[in-house]
Length: 344
Image (cartoon, rainbow, N blue to C red; front, side):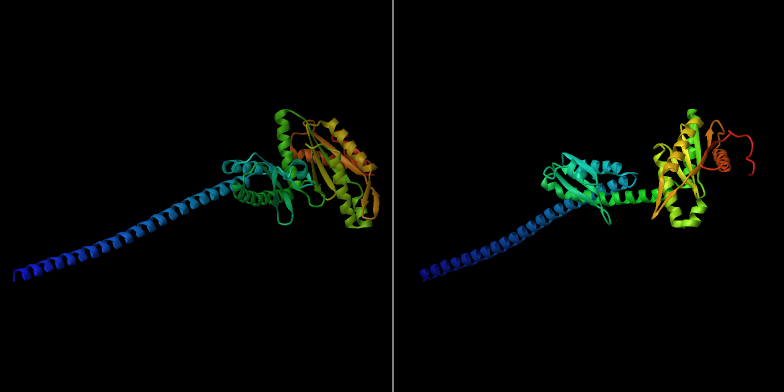
């Protein structure tokens, strides 16, 4: 009986131990499952955090790139010519890209082949709406920097188009579309500025009024297209016989005005005679017609004749009127005649 009781006790203890062991194993397995899930969730969170950091860095780089492009474009469109705009681009390029040399070459001719070797320079064309505006040549650009360069170069190309468009609009506003000379309005502005400068420096200034002789007769005989060609040719001849610092404008109809800074009345007479003689000796080619044309010229000077822009124009015009009355194809300086011309 005692043996049976001992056997049963041992079985009971073994059973309790087995049950306890099973419970412990199940509890441990559950804990391991929970820990595995927690570990997986933690790894997912760390991966998400890493992705967010990468996205933040990417967005930060893109934001920096956009700010660079914005600042560069804002500065470029303020510039009045291509070279100044390119200097802004090159400064932005230095701040973002590693390179040895960068140049801007205009599209005329084949100068890019003469200035830059394709083996040393990466040549990037700057394209406008209908033609190539020029080329950017960059030397020593690393492969991993090419994308940045292309983005900046493309933005520069867009900004350069705006600069050129602004130049074209500005040029059309100050240039007579028929003759290529300055407009009357622009000429008057420049005349006022040059008179103020002449007074400040105590320098002389002369004004020529140039009128095409018998222009109405040419129009009536050959037509307005020939008349237009005569005006274009006269404008070109005047420009060829004046300096870069002089201003040539179409004052109205067949009349041109020439502002000669730092030129006294004697110098004005010399320039006027050179213009008159050049036109007299030239053949004007107008389509299938070859013509001989002459001009009459009047001269007034500052400070000899006046110190006022309107009076200067009026006195040069009076001198031109004298040249017409004297038989045309001649030059008259204001003050050379004290009386009004007599009617023939």
